[in-house]
Length: 275
Image (tube, rainbow, N blue to C red; front, top):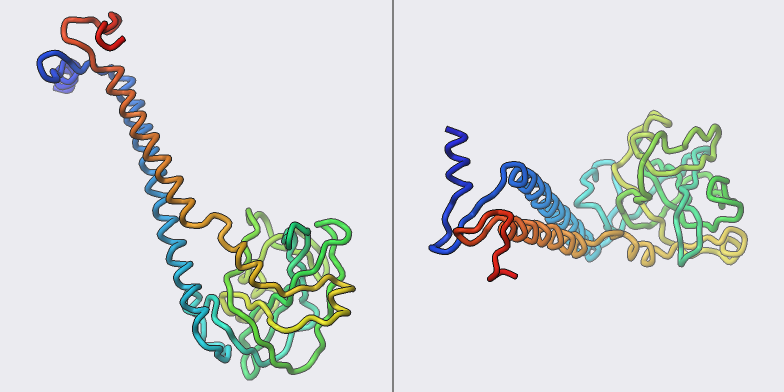
């Protein structure tokens, strides 16, 4: 039955002048490639939809008024880009530098430190600013110390910074604190302190002193870093999807062109009308 069906397909007539004569192996290869190309295009469209939603959430939340950050505010989508006030204190001894962060083409680090919310065991990671690289990306930079004791901060909620492939442990075996991090993993910080953490980071607002600028190159230019958030914006995913679908269409066109010929000619005999 299979052989009879394939034989019938191999001699399919197209009108009165042309016949469709596909080979089995080229047909299977073409089908596999078409499935791959179409699925790649659909995946890009799904990524675009996801990132359009992220952008909409960020833009909407940025318009909302400042709120007090509490342990109950655990919904990342509702909190991303919200302006918040934090009351509590930094946890001393757990400061770290997140490597490979560029600011206006200059290499540097994000300074990261846990902050315990007042009246709670809940913690949140605070990015206190960006500092310049002075002796290599694999060496700890000089970082401003955070004074002990109760304090009030303002900042903006964001997802953890994306810095590429997350391989191994975040500290890459760096033995002591303060540590050098290759990426941020909030669950890893939770295990280090044995305390609960909110599922996002807070980028600290506030003026930077002239001494901090001079000594550490400290900046809190979050508008600049926000512009770097979409390493691949949704529009680019849509463009890639169009490319994959176009390749699928071209492949299908080539498959038809190769396997359609005039009736009465052999597969190896050229069709004079098509030359």
